[in-house]
Image 1 (cartoon, one colour):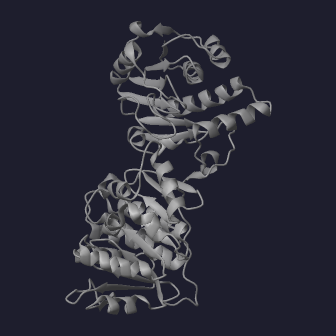
Image 2 (tube, rainbow, N blue to C red):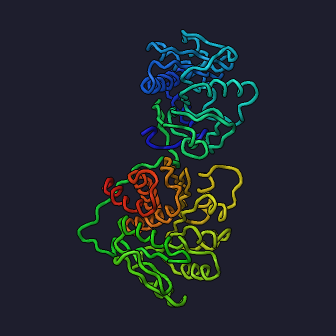
Image 3 (tube, rainbow, N blue to C red):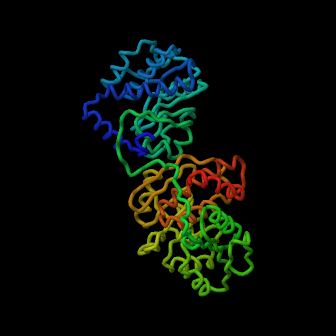
Length: 467
């Protein structure tokens, strides 16, 4: 895995490169490693395709000249369109070794393949004026588009789109993955993402999610040691049923639903305990065998739901808060969780996160880390990009899950999976990582256009892969 899965910000990448340079490796050598590695990917994926490489004045443009020469040496039909003369010594050296044709932007014509080497890591302003016009003309005229390091017009640390850019077929990260490779909206335009190792070895609090290793239950385990998941039913009982079924299929030893009279269990092996009043519910939830309480899916946001949430939060047990429970807590979430000893897991989507956190500037990862530190909770911030953050500052970015998960009920399923993994592992951060991976993998196994019930049926298959 590129840089052992550590994801580097602009400052971290610059420091890592400087460390290599201080060790005696020249910028020219680093550029050669990056450019030849990128050229290898381009050649393997589209050999002999007529190619135009759009080079900027900095080191990303220098990478482009190296790529162009490497492709030319293999017999490719390749030309360079330069936005300006190289400004760095390494880029000047790369251009001096280029033996092919360099075109002014106005003279360049679109080729079947467009390689974007205009601006890479560190861009802070939008591409503008005639440069933007020519860039879009040449990029949009291609059948296949490749970005080197990052698509031009992307803010590296946040994934923000500084410009409207084209969709890419391939993005080739250089040295290490950057936050924008996995954060929306940038991650949606990357296409296939690959990486070129140039010798970077740098640690970061931010890492890429890896497939988990999940332990088989020990011979001495029993239903309570594997974990009892308690799911609180609310106004929409179907959501609680989905959560409970997902927990049952994700390794929990026992699943119970706590509901008002009249609730029907989704199957005979998921026990339902009914309550007529808050005191009765409080007594039920005080059972020492309960490993984690899930509250929020289909819960409701009225006064009755708020009172039940108060009961849950007053009990010192691990809790997973999702959906309506988060909305009910709102901006008071941090203060209401203050002083809790037992682990807390939050699973908000963007709208719910906005309800519980004040956000100004920064990235999704930054805001998630900040709220995790303030609340003491492990947070899985859901979406087309997924960020997992712990109170200690550790962050996991997950590759995009199948877009078919944009279906009602799949969030309830995710809550159940994470709760089950916590019940087993007794580690909130690990449970969030395992849960996110199993959720995405089950979706891939289920295929397109599935229902939450079909998704649940594929969880055991995903789990089996990681035993």
